[in-house]
Length: 270
Image (cartoon, rainbow, N blue to C red; front, side, top):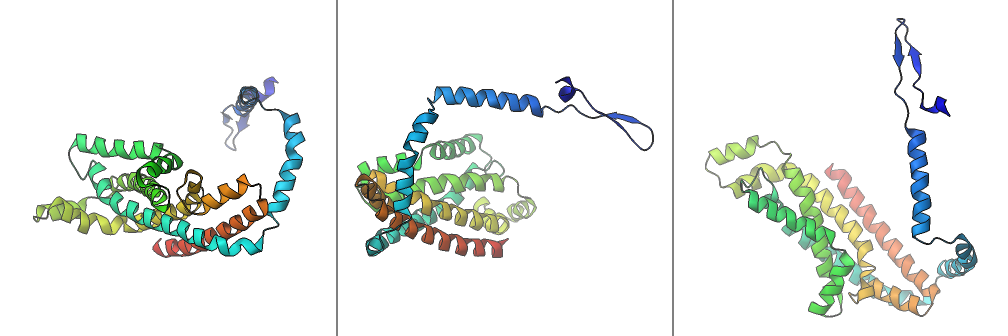
């Protein structure tokens, strides 16, 4: 056992002997194994129960991979609603995130309280799960896609805003400071001197955020926020997994097309 922890000696071509750093791989592996055993005990993992219920999983997967194609026309409308929720919420969130990122960036606004306040807002909003925001929004806006759109807007605002203020703080301020010295306001100098350099990153981040939101929007129906999630929840409740398979098929095709378009645009931006 000691040989695993003992440092190795390597003789170089010039005759010098170098001690190779001892590997901690075995110790780390043992610690991970201990934590895994503790986690299994804490969570009440039961392998016999898993083996017993594996047959149910096989039946469910069999039905899911045998979709009810007659149900497909009823899926088209909610799929479009999901795309609309994602598109509008992502667009509005990314749009408003940019001026908020300007206020959060310490090299743009020389006011520690304002910087701290907007960074805190981004942190709090990113901490809140989108599903919880959608649930709260249903009590404010009622059941439907408006609640889902609001939840996606909040997530997009926090996600894009956080990444963009970090990007702004790494920018070279040469052009920005030159414009300030020429009499430009900070907002105009930011628009003309900083925006062009961060625009590729901003658009790429916004598109990536939109891709993810299409998937997230599909489960918001569980709390009454409209879209495909409403159908998924309804059909799982009725144990109609053939129709669930149809819904998932429509979702996979939709996400695939959107990701393909988004990936193409992001490649042209890079």
